Length: 472
Image 1 (cartoon, rainbow, N blue to C red):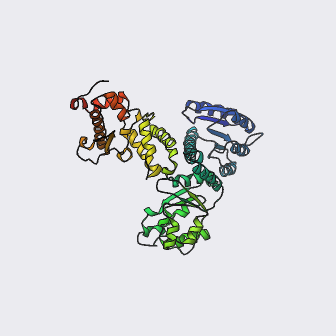
Image 2 (cartoon, rainbow, N blue to C red; image 1 turned 90 degrees about the vertical axis):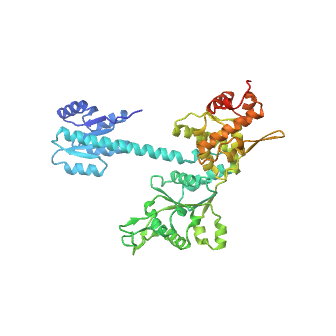
Image 3 (spheres, one colour; image 1 turned 120 degrees about the vertical axis):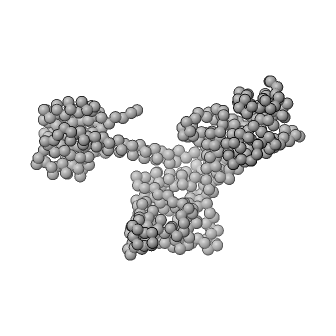
């Protein structure tokens, strides 16, 4: 639905003024409702939502200041513009402090009113867009939207819901690609800090000589390139959440400073002479074996205990393989929108391959696999030939006691995934036709694709010119 933000309520007890404003604004494309005083305005606004409310300050029964207070309770995002005659400017300024968008002084030019309304309209559009984006972001990272049905993961999600209500330190552990940042964001957006910043940093990706400045900031002149004061990530995350990914890679010198910041709730910028208080919830994550690092002396045990009040261990995908089906469905739905395609699902044979794969790259690898397959497929369904070779594991096809080498049907090596995928697909089709003596029906069974799809691919690759074939 398109929102035009053109609905205005004019609240004014001067009848001549209201008639003039209604006529002028209607000509400019606004839909205008009229109220003679504050009480009438409240009743009208309960029945109909207005994008902008233009109200006089001095009115009988209920003045503009009281109306503003009540409107803000009804709608925190209400955009209110005050009209003030000479002698009531102080009241208009008070209204601004109470949340009015702007005020115009009487007598005013109509163009001045129009300019103020246009600014208010743009502000309202921006506000609503921010609210929409925040809701979208919150929805994306709420726990009930995290895909999975494995009993251990469902138990972990219950723990996460409880943890979200507190500012307790959380350490999320698990292999790369298991969704550690997704869990951290979910904790943030389920907490009372969700309106404040969520700041994420991968500590392993920041050069060691820049890490201290990145985390704690610096003052002008602290080092050669410090040409201005710069706040660090702790300050950016004030009142919100700071996610320290790959915390196991933090150098020991900075482990001490991080520990001090967590203990004291204070940070000191590089080159500064005084500290600054910050209120930040820390969620850390690592794919590293921290206990082993402590034993080896490369990670401080006191910092570990400070971070690891609550430990959330994420399972690798191979240990919750039953979630693959749900994840695949989720990714297909997401990529249909992103890629503007309409893939309906995964063929049974291809799904079996996905279920039998060990997924060393975990959920991230599965996501990339599905996106790639949806781009490369020539069918409405993802088929075995759309999957990467490491998942299909088809250097040779075994049929009974026979072994068919498909590598001989591939063209010379290429770095192009798309080209190599086409070569592999063509090789599989040629091998299947060779195995079945050109019988298309039997070939579709070996290839685990539909008869229609096989005909399409034979034509696409000009296979019928190279290989004699039989009909059904």
